[in-house]
Length: 168
Image (cartoon, rainbow, N blue to C red):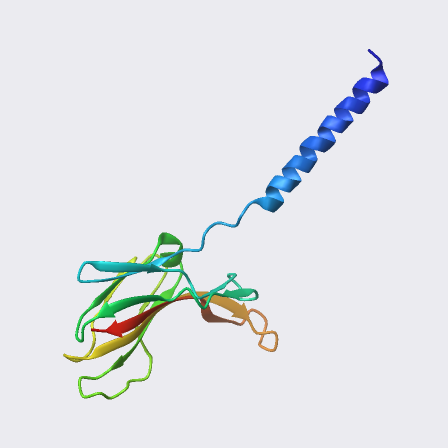
């Protein structure tokens, strides 16, 4: 067999293998985004993040179809379970509700966790008969303000999961 033929065949085989690796790497789908589970009285629903950014909150994607919906009676508690990749960073829970008298309350943060402190939380409303309207889980990310002093970073929501409540 001719030596130049073997060299050409080996080069061609190497090129095909390299092209195959590049195509495989380019066609791999990114890992699925983490989901948060909301549970009430044995019923549960999982939600994808409707806002998801990289850790430095420079590139963000929105998914308006991601918020979950669950029917919840007034006064009921909601249990939230977050996956490890959310729990390993700071995260918080915010709620919006209406009092038993019908007064609309502004959204408020009801719990904040440091990394690896907790994977779950139960939302208990401050008064009997109140009706939850929205429950949100917010995962923190960091963003450096170019106008601020060197090394000055602020924590922002890098991902948000939402539960919209249907009253029963």
